[in-house]
Every structure is written in structure tokens, then in C-alpha cells.
Length: 291
Image (cartoon, rainbow, N blue to C red; front, side, top):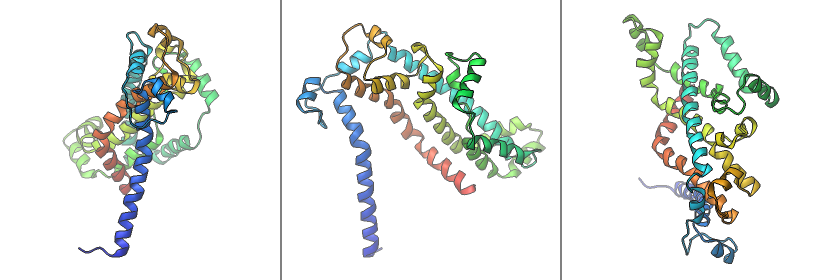
């Protein structure tokens, strides 16, 4: 099929724009990697303009990942908060979305209005802090799981998907004597893997990237997530005292530590995302079309 001049111009323009956007995303991260593996004296000689390292040095990674480093503890905390938080958030989101997708649920409209209200109006930082303090959750291992364990937006996305599942499937299971939980577990969930992966990824990113709640509710560095350590290194241009003590040696220049910390923290997401990207795209598309 022969393309017209206008179609060729349109396709060419798209390729040019997408290429520029891709470079805008890739070049800064490549620069971060280059600086993190370049000796500081070369970095200084080139005034920080390094895109292709001419000499390799892993002193920054060696320092951050030294035996007993706070990074390991922070990484373990982040993995614990992320896995626990995503599992709890998915459980709460799936069960509430399944209930609200049922048209026969008494008070369904009122309940939906309550959920939507929470999307528009929050409790506020100070009331939330006071509430968490009164519950005795400050500086605990569970506060960062509970404080982000639900999203009304994610519930609505999942509810929209559930409403698109044929009622005949659930009715057939009910006739065979299946309970609501069994219908959810054996009929609805197997058909909902794309939207579960989508919502799970959204929760995963939120939990993995969170540092603000840790700043508010956690004061013990041994319970801090790795993002808070990264934020401290970048924002304050200094290392947490516990990290300095664990390393037991004079730290290398801060710029290299900052770049190496960014790579260490971002790497897991860069590895995981490509494997679940197709589920993310499919789930968002189905939820939007059927909404």
C-alpha cells in the first residue's frame, strides 16, 4: 500500500518526536550510570561532562554495599513494606471492588459516594499524624504498610473490570453451590489477572518510591526504607550517620555516592517492569473501554 505525502510526513514526525522523548529519558539515566563508575579525578578533569566513561571504578558501590551497610537494612525494609503493602492493598481493593460491582448490594450508591469523597477530600497531614500516634504506630514496622494500604482510584478501576465479567458465569457457580468467596477466588480472579497486575503495579510503584511517609512516621534509621536513605543522600549532600558508621572508612566524594545510590535504588524497578508491562497496558485498556 502506497502512502501519501501527508501520511509519510505524519509517520516521520511521530518517529522524530518519539526518538527525542526517548533520548530525553535515557541520556540522564545513562549519565548517572557513567558518573557512578567514573573515578572522581576524571570527573573533575572533565568538569562533570561524562557520557562515556574512559576509566572504570566501583569505589562508590563498594562503599555503599560494604559489609554491614545501612543500605542492606534499608533494602530489606523496603522489600518488606512493598510486598506486605501490595498484598494487603490488593486484598482490600479486590474485596471492596467485587462487593461494589454487585448491583444487588444494598446501599451501593451511597457507599460509592463515600469512596469517591475520599478521593476529593483527605484527612490532612496533621490529623493523620495524630491518629497514627494515638494508635501507637509511630516508628513501627507496620505504619508504612497501613498508611498507603488503599486507593479509591484503584478500587474503581478494578470495579469497572469486574462489572464487565458476564453475570452468567457467577450465576452458574452460585447454582452449583459456590459461596461468594469461592466465586471470587475460582471464577472472577482467574479472569481478572490483567487488572490485578495493573493495580498491583500501581501499588508496587507507590510503596517502592515512598519516602515522605517515612519522613513523617519513622525516626529509626534501621526501620527506614531505602528511598529515605536515597533522599537524604541527594537532598542533604550527606550520608546518614548509620551509613557512615557501618562503612567504617572515609567516604568518597558525595557526587559519586549520589549517582551510585540512584542506580542501586532504581535497578529493581527497571528489571521488574518489562515483565509486567503487557499486563499493565492490557488492564488499563480494558478498564477504560468498559468504563
